[in-house]
Amino acid sequence: DAGVTQSPTHLIKTRGQQVTLRCSPKSGHDTVSWYQQALGQGPQFIFQYYEEEERQRGNFPDRFSGHQFPNYSSELNVNALLLGDSALYLCASSLDRGNYEQYFGPGTRLTVT
Amino acid sequence: KNQVEQSPQSLIILEGKNCTLQCNYTVSPFSNLRWYKQDTGRGPVSLTIMTFSENTKSNGRYTATLDADTKQSSLHITASQLSDSASYICVVSEGGSYIPTFGRGTSLIVHP
Image (tube, rainbow over all chains, first blue to last red; front, side, top):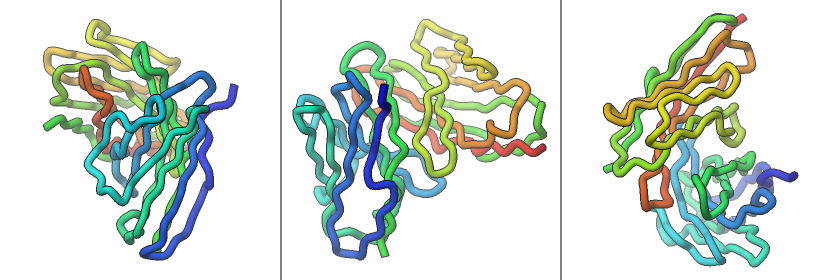
């Protein structure tokens, strides 16, 4: 049973560029959430996707957008990258019932120079 | 505003010793509380999850407690091992919301 997978593992971008991160949820999970984790901090909620729609969003600007595909996989897009966007981006999947326990992927380390 | 505060911020112990990590929260209404272990540069891994009616949950050498009245939780690690070195994060979910509130974590270092 494959867990949550994310790609790429590491990424280096320049200020102003755009980036797309990808996530495949744990088998059987239909809900995907994205988090940003700065060094030494706890994860910050970006948004959650369910049934291909953004269901809830945290306090992040519109430069952050996402998508969920019919197979429940998801993408996170960040436009006009800033130095402050450098962080570990985590994807978590869950089942939309029960205790909503989230399973996290290994993350994508984004460095903006 | 929902908040989750963890203490201590960091902790150093010797291998084989026990330790207890604390979590205080203001999230309301309460839905559930989870403890995660996060190795450096990796995604968090769930250790325990507790709902309002549960006050103790164990997972091997990890035991979590919950006092919903005082809004406090603790994670007790017994007979620590070098592999326990990691960040331990307390996460509290609000009833009716899909957005969990994360603590900043306690960084635990276990020395031989």
